[in-house]
Image (cartoon, rainbow, N blue to C red; front, side, top):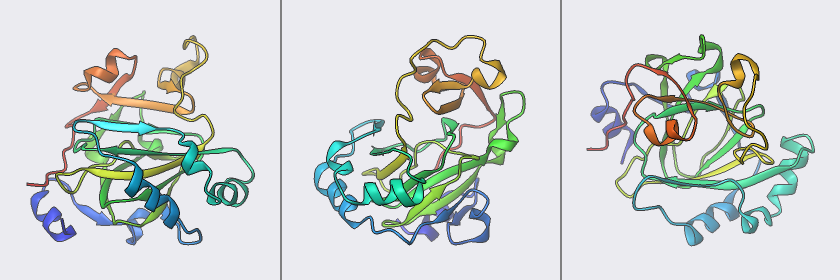
Length: 224
């Protein structure tokens, strides 16, 4: 679906381009690496689930691509990384997370990201009206800064979306220990290197221990 049509269907939130200056506070476009092989792998070997989202933090076949070593050395300063994906049919905000370290997203299909700023978290809550929406065209790669709140992409077509996700190694994997007296920020720690606030409507995540901290509407991106 074209960006103009998406804008017409979503008068409740402005959908912006990633090449606009308004994206600069959240991240940047990556054009110094070639993700073609990973995109082709995703197109051939991964599917969009019938419902919800499917996330894989680390996919061995994707990490065998030579770009992993280049990214680990140059982009992440020789830190170990993981390459995985998130495919799905999501259309709503649901929650906002952040990591300590940048995330790389590569759009295998067109998709929309709903973004916010860590600095706008107050007393472990975040008001959803502060969210900004950005259209990520197929083939585009972006860096999402560690100070950027984000969550799963939103689809722009009924079939769903596919997105490559690259992060510091072991991000989004289970915690070793139960959360105990970790301070105010510790209340948001949900998985390794994953601090998460969710909307009160996301019972599945709440039942798993996610902190209810998104105030206001659970923003939806409409495609019809």
